[in-house]
Structure formats: structure tokens, C-alpha cells
Amino acid sequence: MIAPVIVLMLAFQPVTSVTVTGKITYDKEYPVSFATVVIKGTRNGTVSNADGIYSITVADPGAAKLVFSSAGFRSKEVKIKSKQVINVKLLVDEKDMDAVVAKKNW
Image (cartoon, rainbow, N blue to C red; front, side, top):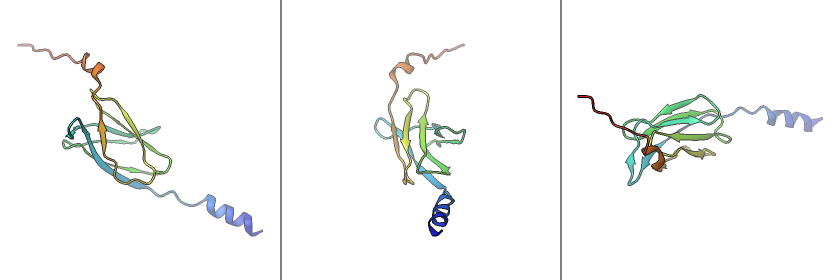
């Protein structure tokens, strides 16, 4: 009779949320301004500031992944696990750079 009670207690332990922060950079540690950070499989996300700094609260960090993306860079997925600080270095996506066109209308 004691064993089922213990199993039930373990099954209903609350999930702890955690705030993950970090800096998104590229090349020689240049910040990636206004990059998108999304919890994979959700619509929950944030955007890095002009210095590449972000902060996001994650409800179930043990199972969650963050997806980092920005125009002109390859997206990157990172498992959170128990980390509270995740600094990410994005790689420039050369194929996307061919699609960028600057047009001057004077």
C-alpha cells in the first residue's frame, strides 16, 4: 500500500521554471542584434537586444530546446538541460547572403 502512494507523489511534482539568459554573437564575438530566440515546439520566444543579450523563461528546462535565428545566419538549436546561461555563436549563412539585394531609389 505504501509503494503506490510514493509513486503518485513522484508523478505530481511541480515543474520548475527557469530564466535562461545569454549573448548571441557571430564571427569575432560581434553581437547579433534582434535575433529571435524561441522555445522549440512553442510560440514562446523573445528577441535579443542591440548588444545580442536575451532573457527567456522556460517552464520545463530539462526537456526544452532553444532555437536561435536571425536573417543571414544559420539557425542553431541548444538543449537547455540545467543551464541558466547559454551563450551562442551563430554562423553566417552564405547562401542567404546571395538573396539580399539593396535597392537605391533616388
